[in-house]
Image (cartoon, rainbow, N blue to C red; front, side, top):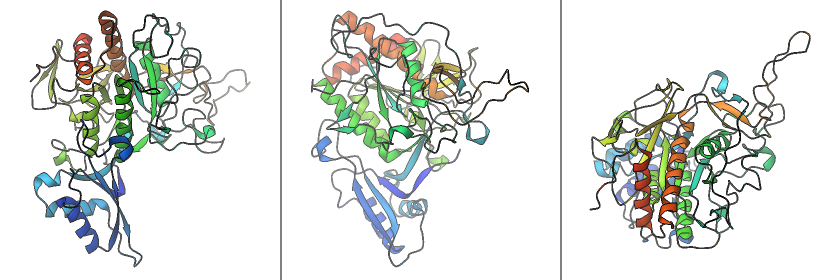
Length: 477
């Protein structure tokens, strides 16, 4: 369970006083002592947050990129620099500086870099069918009820009959001020991990995470056909994203959501976020009190009424993995989770909901992480879902001697479906359940909340309705 991080960057969570921050001063001092130069980048752009003093708090951080000077200083890994800075400041300040972790999508692996279970399959049943007719917009039903929007923060969503026009299930092309919300690099369409499936030449195998976002969207659609699905691309074909970059994505998604609640054209409210990935803190001793820049962005989304569902990881471990481990410690019971420690359960923001995976017989999957920070268990082994119909990699099936029979082509997904395993695919099951509960409530109330407090309360009611999460919402302070 290695900690993956960006070798030349540290992140500091700061308040408004950027110039006099003790941790930033310590970084500058130690870098100068090693003959290193620093490039500093503030977190939030003015176009998104103004002066940073809005209802969701101040700017959360500054990034320091480290490079050797022209004189050729000896190379210093930022982990070493982090240790030196930590030794020179107090415990509280130590928790404000961290590596720029690399969040990795949660899929179970086998040898040679190939994911377990990603193999073509056939779906013999009917396509998921919406029970509410479409209205004038993909965001509403015929009677004007706002469809719940599930944002899939992943690798994008490829071509598939379930998602192609005229169904309007997928809300493609969402942007903020003309820019994509997801901060993943935009590849040429030919090399997109959800279009072609591989970034190299035609002789290459499919990328390790090719189809990941489409598969997750397919799970959400099976569980809640009446939900709208919003792709937010954070992963490329390797399934990795830097913590700093995903924090930027969440910042933009929050602003998009806020404008949507306010009725700004081209934006819409987001109800549920699915994030299937995570990272480990740099030291096991940091597992209980690690606090990173990503945590604040997720909290801001939750304070704005967005439910956040995250996967628990696939290392078969009880070690806390983030962001899932920022959830409060609970004991799972048939009647819901019972909180057993301090944590972020409040009536003022929605709960963070980590999910682990189970086998078809209901037992915990052998690869699934679990611990008191996991709230829910959902199917995660041999899940059947959508795959881009455009995928056909370089792997070749075996043929019989007479050429009349052959094995399944392992990376041809022209059927549009596949089997895959991982807690990545347990999280969207819960996301779909929450979306369905939100829609039922809106139909009864005949209106969706148009304020953040109302959206938080509605989200908590959906959590309770699902039945095995929390038995009741917390009491308002």
